Image (cartoon, rainbow, N blue to C red):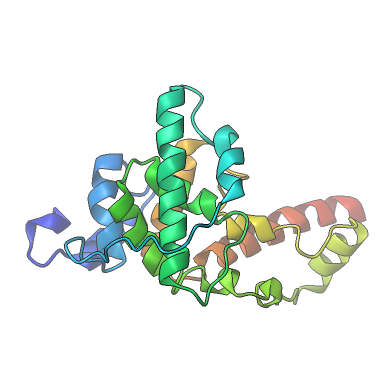
Length: 220
C-alpha cells in the first residue's frame, strides 16, 4: 500500500518501508518521505534571516565529499547552498554551536537533491533532537559514552585507540566512513525513521561485533 495514498500520510507504513532491507529504495521517494518522517510541514518553513556574517571554513574543504562527476559550477552552487543552510541554522539556534562534521550531514540532503528550504527544515528538526548533544558548547557531553563490556574495553585499550575514535561516525552520520552513496542513503533512511540514538546504536554494534571478532582471534 502506498503510504501517500491516504490523507494524512500513513507514517507507520512509511516508517516500515524505511526500515526494510534497502530502505526507501529510490531518491524520488526519499524526497517526499524524509520530511514526513520528521513531521515537517513543508508549507510552513521559517523564512531566512541573514543577520550574521559568519564564514564556514569547512565548506571550502568539502570538495572531496562531492561526487567526482559534478561540474565545477554545480560544486560551487552546492557549496553556496551549504553555507546558507548552515548560517541559517546558526542564526535560528543561537544557543547551539557549529562543529566540524555538521556540514557533512547537511550535504547528504543537498545531494539527494533537496532544495535549501527543505534541507533547512530537516536540519532544523535534527539539531533540536537527533544531533542536539553534538551542538553544545562543551562537546564533552557527546563523549559521555562508557564501555560496559570488559572484553571489548580491554581490546580497545590494548589497541591504543583514543576513546573518541568513533565519535566522527556519529557527528557526520557516517558520511566519512561509508563511501558507497546507496549505503549512506540507506543509513539515513534508518536514522530518520528510528529513535534519535540510532546512530550511536549502530556504532555500538559495529564496535562490539568487529572488536570482539578481533579479540577472539588474539586470545586464541
